[in-house]
Length: 158
Image (tube, rainbow, N blue to C red; front, side, top):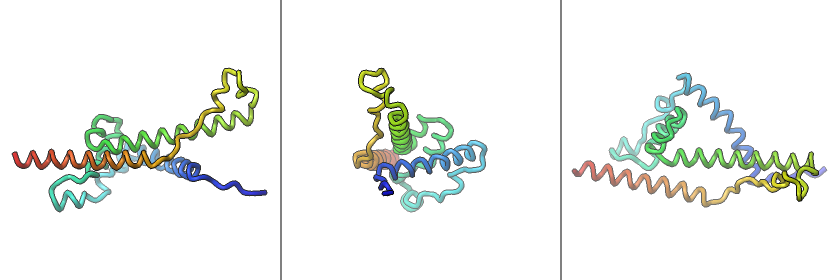
C-alpha cells in the first residue's frame, strides 16, 4: 500500500490544529490569572535602547486585549495581531469545512449529486496559503511601525 504524501497546505492545517489546544489552554490560564504574558516576556530591546516603539511594540498587549475580548484596543495597540488572528481562524475554518465536505461527499454521494440542493457541499475548498497574506502582514507591521514612529517623533518635537 502506497503512502499518500501530504501537501504543504495539509501540513500547515495540521500545524494549525495542533496549535489550537495550546492557544485555548493559554487563553484559559490567562483568564484565571495563571498566565500573564507581559510579566513573562522580556521588554522590547529597541524601545529600551532608543525610547521609540518598534513595529512589533504592542503585540503582547494586543494579544492580551484579544484574550479579554477587547478588539478595538487590540487594533489600536497593534493591528497585526488582529490580522493574524483573523487569518488563522479563516484558514482553520475553511480547511475544516473542506475536509467535512469531502467526508460527506464520500459517505453520501447521492446528497452531493448535481441537481441536489446540497451539491454545493462538494465544492467547498480550503483557503490557499499564498505569499500575499505574508506581504500584507509585513506592510501592516512596517506601515504601522513607521506611522507610530513619526507620531512619537512629532510628539517629542512639539
